[in-house]
Length: 390
Image 1 (tube, rainbow, N blue to C red):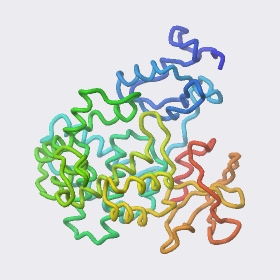
Image 2 (image 1 turned 60 degrees about the vertical axis):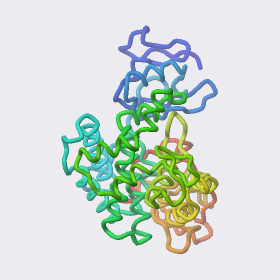
Image 3 (image 1 turned 60 degrees about the horizontal axis):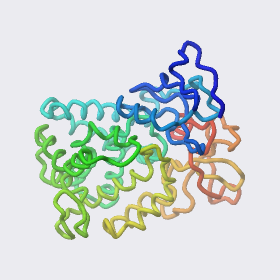
């Protein structure tokens, strides 16, 4: 790609003339205005990705990336704003993700500064999930525009609720599992975004923080007034494995709480389906396949149950229909994993409907032909997909 003219108002000194990258346009705390690709043209960072520290910005700039050719250098028109507060579940999800981030920011500096707020957030997110179950599960698979550090805990809680409500956990146990899911990584919260976008493996100091974070999470939770023994033990054990290879205690088999093994499966699934370290998220079906292949490392029964509950085509999954339309799964169909409820968004050439159109995947023209990753779909924004639940 030949170097392109500077963005008006920028100094040539801000430009990487080899890659055509306007370095000044990459700013800490602001979304990228274009996709960034490597020398082979592979997208490593999507438009809208947020760089959360100057250290990470410098690492990104040193990678020799360039804007994707069809993006040019002018900041692209931003995606349409999400629906206003109260008009749909996704705005509520984003509100509580922001509240979680604000709470965790304070707790990472002074755990005693927000007594009671963690329980308030857990209760609100449980209620949101129970009212909008499929929309909450859908968000996990396409709504990644906010920082990893606030979306990961919220999505962990949603998946914990999926498991708890389906398997009949009593109220207090379900609340402890939900709370543990939200707060399991509180002990490394301030590092999460940097590590999720870091190019290359963690260094020795970072590994020490990672290995200590279950205990640090418990310390911060105790300081914040959380005393529930099941909640705290689940957090401490959520990286333990039945074969003894986990941390921080190296527990084995029956020494590990079942709730902690549930969180381990959830954490692994989210690592697959959420973008991290510049790699594209896995399509949900591929993520579930890999999770099944790794089941012996966790718990076979929990993994099998998790896959059954989420379904082959979880809500939020994009699928190609036999008639050539692109659809999004909006709801799982009871006892029929192969034919979920979907709405068509339009055609892959970018001819999108003004409003999504219901399609019955049990009818031959609308049967699911295959998966279609969102990253390969030009012009389809999360805001447009979210209309399917309004």
